[in-house]
Length: 485
Image (cartoon, rainbow, N blue to C red; front, side):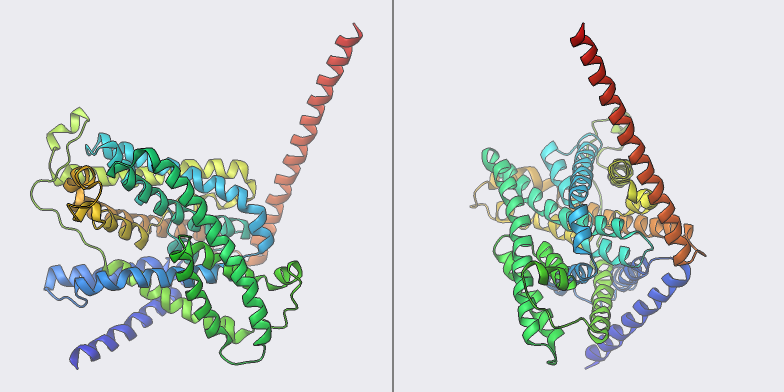
């Protein structure tokens, strides 16, 4: 009975803290994500290591984390889709794909180089670590950009990146694991096939299910509980798409886009949509999203583990670091460099993104510092040591895979959690700096500044087109003069 009472008190306290954390963000621009993660760290690792109090047993936490993370991701991405413009998504999809793939490739390669040269990992193990930590967390990105004063273009760009990179991390990590088991010949083809299936099955099912649901909601117009039934449909869609080998995250986002842009899709598929998203539904969904995201980030802090004792199997290939071989110090240096590579990759990629998408120039700080990793990274890091090829001596590829990965089990988990924590902190600082820049300005002043910036970009594009046309005319004139001679 005492445990039940303490549980109720803890749940109520977490909700209160989540509410006040949101108020703190509105006043100080310090994102509530960091406050909630720190709360989780206090309730979990701090109380356990300092006072010996374990509020949530590790086995229960391990059991609850994956399904709750999936639930949080589905609801958060559905919420993000509801607030995205379909026209904007279509126009920004190409830029988002270039931005996402470039950021992912840069991050994976730089992490692999650090892991190999600084920490002595085999290059395949370094690439696996890079793919696990290579993507932006959907839960972190979507919930953060919703509260920031960014252009809709940038919000759409970062939302799409978070979904695309989640799929990239999972598919590429699984493909590298397959390669390490000895399936080298098929791993690239398998990865490309899985990537295509994940994107197209997820997006396709999201559209189909969304259109069917528009028809159902039209029939349910005026009936109670229509939102709760929609939530049930979302969970069925997410689970079904994951079972089919697609991306449930992509399906949830597209499903939200279809429902949120019902008029556009209604015209496209000739559906007479009678219903509307009234204030009660919007308010209820907003409060549900608040509840889920609050517990998600507290759970992220609760899940944090860090334990290194004695020798660590890290041997640097860099001469001046050789004195630190097999020490926790070298491991921490390597972890710090992994974080720096993530930050550097984001920074470099932000210039490329702004170059091909000048509309986001004013939001470059937010783009370069939006780097938060989430539970997906921790789950993948754990998965690498729970698949049969690592745990079952009779499984195919056991000798190859277990031989490569066995020395790095605790390192992967420790490094992943440290990177999750440090990237969330870095994202918090980036949001603070980005929002503080605009403190004191009204929405009208910000809109006016962005309009002026947009006009300058359009004028520059027009001038570049005129310059290109003049260049083409000169070339044509030169050719005509040569022909006349």
